[in-house]
Image (cartoon, rainbow, N blue to C red; front, side):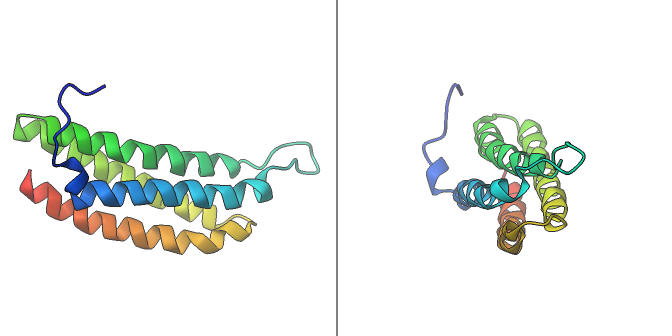
Length: 131
């Protein structure tokens, strides 16, 4: 997939935190799905179920962006990938807000994900300065 994945990547805190967020997003999604997987009285589905998939997909995208940034030779290209990470974090936060407005017991776990995302933001900012 990537021509040269840096060997130091597993040791990077930003990489480790991205993996934690992915794991957490998947687990939280499992709590939401049973509560949101139903049809309303008018026969339509609850659109909030799609936000669970969004947090997983956006969380999955964090790691490849880190790999791309670490694999780039030019600083400018590295910063483009770091900017993409910021965008993904903002999307994740937005979807957390959407999931908090649902009628699911899973929303009790959203503050945990938000806390991890805020930690990731801090780690990502420090990591960006090293690029």
